[in-house]
Amino acid sequence: MATLEPGAASASSHREAPLISGQPQFDNTDVYAFVSPDHPDTTTLVANWIPFEEPAGGPNFFTFAEDAQYDLHIDNNGDAQGDLLFRYTFKTQTKNDKTFLYNTGAVTSLDDPDLNITQTYDIEMIKLRKQKVTYKTKIADDVPVAPSNVGKASMPDYATLRNEAVHKLTNGAKTFAGQADDPFFLDLRVFDLLYGGNLSEVGNDTLKGYNVNSIALQVPTDMIAESKEQPVVGIWSTTQRKNAQGYFSQVSRLGMPLVNEVVNPIKDKDKFNASSPWEDAQFLKNVTNPELPKLIEAIYKIPAPKEPRNDLVDVFLKGVEGLNQPPHVTPSEQLRLNTSIKPAAEPKRLGVLDGDNAGFPNGRRLSDDVLDAALQVVEGELVGAKNDLGDAVDKNDKDFEKAFPYVALPTEGSRGPLAKGTTEGNDVRNQLGDALQPAGAGGMDDTTLIAGSAGAGALGILLIGGALMWWRRMRERAY
Image (cartoon, rainbow, N blue to C red; front, side):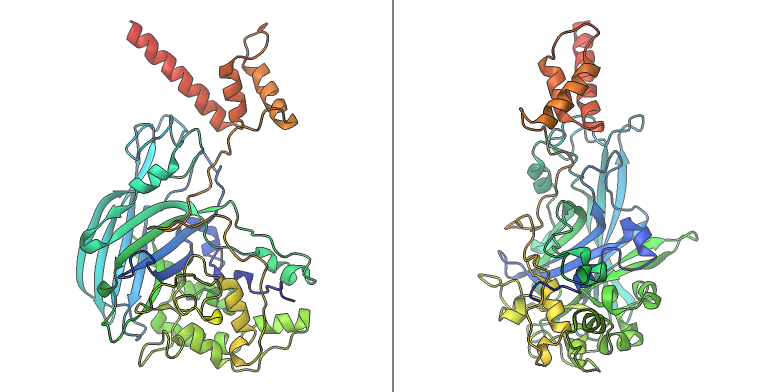
């Protein structure tokens, strides 16, 4: 039973509610918060949007919505009220709307003229008291977004584009927005009757190879914590979308992994996405009397812990006492982080359950196996029902970066040419070669080979188009 993982959706908000599943640009998939390992006097927040980005999903690649407010919220005193808000808003620029291409040639920098569609963003910092704005200022203006990774031919050095998109703010803060590898790792086949009903479906990282759009913000810890005496902060993110009347309304919300995915029933999911932490009392019964352990008992005969589940309230709605529970806390769904706990030299994937207090549920690091940890807690780990349940997916398929923004580079849309000598590779080159050769020509020259090996549709057309544009420029210069 060590590979059982009935809570696979518990750690991610990928399509977690009926309405938001049809609005991917506004769907917040995951939230992370941790003391920065290489700058321990700062705290890093990461929030992701747009689930299941297929890397080759052109010609319309993945952009942040212009009619949205992407918000990172901070509660620094535990009263379930937001005290500080960082608001990201985006603008899109198109250089040439007479082409279908996202880029018209190889892109080597964010200001490259061949990057046809670009985005920039502003950040507002807003201070609040009891839901009223007390102060507002713009802390970033027209910062460039890292583009979707079209492929190796279009973006031969994507790491350079990533680095250019890291922007320094005042007071030592940093920001990033752009595409990244989806850092969440899990086997999502849980929905097929908890891994097939007999554990026949387990151990596959369902999100391997998919990307997301990430927002990352690193700020001095004293900028968000109430004081050294009260270092615990609560973090959640929301998306607000402009409606037909021109007003913004909240359509997505995410903080602590688990709650809206497999704790809230269908009737409450959209309501939760439109709600705020100070309204969470209405969902309390969903936490104290959860459905998931009953399903596990019905299918796998593992006894469900006794209700009411006050242990889940402590972990998911209050914070762990003596670790990341603020004094006089108001129970609410937030990701709570004790910013005074230094980063672990060797992080353990199960975090607090394995004695690593710098990890989940004290915040959430990119490498934390929150799925296994959350499942073990739901199945009674903290009330005497010791277990090692998990989905047999223990780490991300890509290594995370050592420096801000820490998320891994996105998977590219083109994997490049197939190896010479393979049957499939020869078939592709031969088919495209025959189509591209002039009538009566024998064999294929290098240009045909390049176009053929680039493969599939738009990328091959892009290379041909680039060659034609180069040829035209040469002719114009000759005349």
